[in-house]
Length: 106
Length: 112
Image 1 (spheres, rainbow over the protein chains, first blue to last red):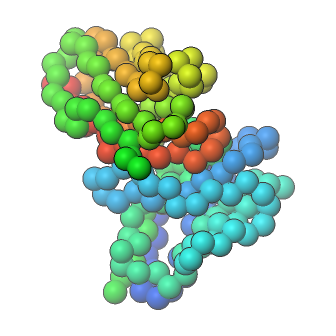
Image 2: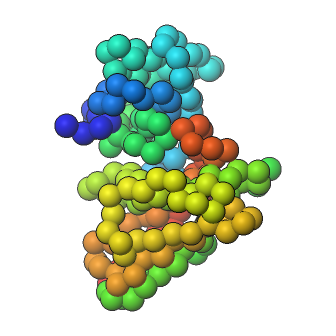
């Protein structure tokens, strides 16, 4: 079992829709969780961090953490074509999932 | 505030050679981590340095090594290059461990 798992996608949503990205992790003692966005040919850039159970909102992005179920998700509201990228989930900084490729169609 | 810088951006080496990559973190950041990214394996952790000490190490052979200087700049070295070492090498800096990381643009290494 991989330490951090994500659906590889691709996930395709129409413009204006909500994109939902999910991530599960195996280490129950994990304390910090991060979402990064990576455009093709670019390096990852931090979108959000979350440390406590519940929701954390930042603009169109909402991160959700459920430590009991060992999953973390990222919701992107009002998706835009510019959101098309690969989204990487990271646990405790150094353990990354394989990423989910998101395509937002105009 | 300037971001993370990496040099060189592109590198072509021959199998058996060695290579040194450099990373300058964001000012004030004392932690530097290195990652290898390939299409097949994704983003894989190499090692982390904090205040010149290696704090964590990923599952890579001893051919991969690194160091950090007193000004927090870091270098990683790969000896006896293999074709499979062709990858994007990313450096990330942060204030500490298990907090937000900020990535540099990466060094694209091609081994022929």
